[in-house]
Length: 458
Image (cartoon, rainbow, N blue to C red; front, side, top):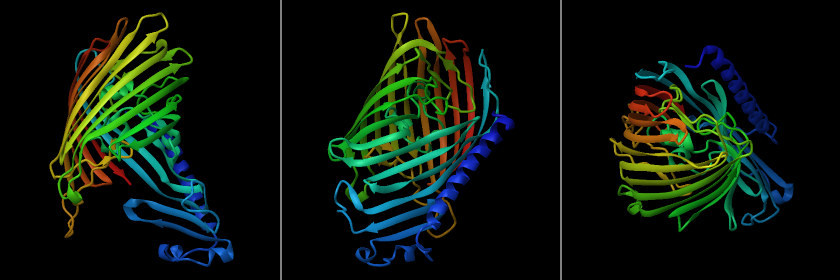
């Protein structure tokens, strides 16, 4: 568990940054032409744009679980709203939200496993700005940053321009590279508290870069291609080696996509995906490691720093959804070319089953080929239209192999089960219970993991 000396300074930094950005947003709103008594009044036309040259509208309001909303819009009489380059309107709109998650964990181990300390820790404390803008071209943006145990963490900092001819959406900044169905899906929406161990070990974490992508086949599939730099030490998962360049491509397809007539029938779909990457290290170093699907636990498999300047990964993904039931799995293999010659192979995979006992179905995003947030049919409450929220059960088996040749990073087998109570789309309680075995490395042994999380995300 992170010490108080480590935790609170980081929280103060994140808090000051959040306050500064909120004050800047407020200053931008209050600096507009004139205050409005309400959102509706602000949205009402003021004067003829042709007579005045431009008409300004603004809004800055708290909208409950939707967060703090802001808008600054200027209408002009110049340009065509249907053109690729737009000058008829200048727009900056969005919302300010946050996520707070607290974890508690207890462990039982034997063998040579060390560093497992029972405790409670602040898993995430983040502030999020997201919205859309028109500054010559329409675009959308997201900024999300905050605290994870013992360090500042930048999750997203990007701008994306959609619907460009031939290339689709161009996205640049700092974000998750397009590999790994479970890592591309928000950590709030994956069914268990942490991503599967093989993804933590092999898939690159949030990184600076640029990507292109577009749905194809009338929404039946997606493709993306991107180039990325090193994430440094801020990413929650993946390699922390610096001076790393990565090229990644991903394609997905829905061979079955039955949404039901007017949404009356439960959705049925089959998702298939293929992705690959090439990683190049300019300083000849690369590293793979993973925790046993608990962020309070230590790393239990670790290749240590490898002397290599090249590695490539191939990943297969598949998912099946039939109403409240879903089955999802991924397979990965990485080939590393050491500087001394030869080749090393690391890899792994997982299979996860989830079931919503209250009847909800996992939503699927056809723009990105990922899963979205489960929303209860009735939020928890005692009113006439409220109920007990949503209850989701999950079971996952995973295997990660980081041992080959002279590198004995270890092998990890895990069985993790969990229950998630979604009181609303923004409030969730989780409990996970798992059993695992580490062998073939420096710390062989067995472990039992019991962990709990309480989270708020709006």
